[in-house]
Length: 276
Image (cartoon, rainbow, N blue to C red; front, top):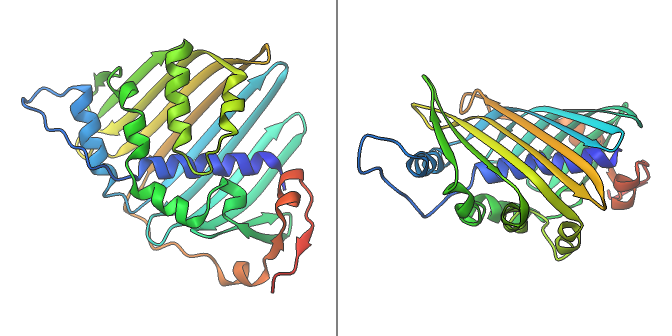
């Protein structure tokens, strides 16, 4: 197993839980003219209706002379929560091609010809109960409220685009608040963020003009980590929302998957524990 695979899977789950959260807040436009605030409010309502979707997520990280690119193509459904994805990474350390299934308690990962299983907390750092609570709460959107107020709305023929550009301490504090609400957040985040100096952050969210459902998400972050420049770009595309057939995890995967210890998942080895 590759450590990058675990990080990438956690990123995808974070995008899904953030996108599908409920919110007790609502706002209605007092006129026919749309604003960033009203579009965000309608998008929050629309997110509650998402039952399933395809997603394509590409992450590129440049740090020093090293480039790493990861692409995840998959599908997910909310109830019962199931994800199916193909994960491909390309870096100086070599390429990896991994197939994965995830439900609300277990991750099943294919490494070469073998299947392994692990508790979902080994992938996200959060328990199944915490993940479920995350998808049912409005904490993510509430913590990002200050960012939403600064977004610029652009109207296109078939879509709305919300964009934001920022840098310095303000965006760093907003990012900390968002990540503090994410699955697996812990006090160790303080140490991580203390070493990161965000110099630039750009984000664009695109949603359908009629349904307000998400279509694309993009962000680019430039930062310094211990005096080394890092640029990270994330692009996500959603398609076939609420049009998928029910997802299932194949019986042969569940039956043949070997238990994988947390230490082997992080260091790239495939040592197993027989948990039968």
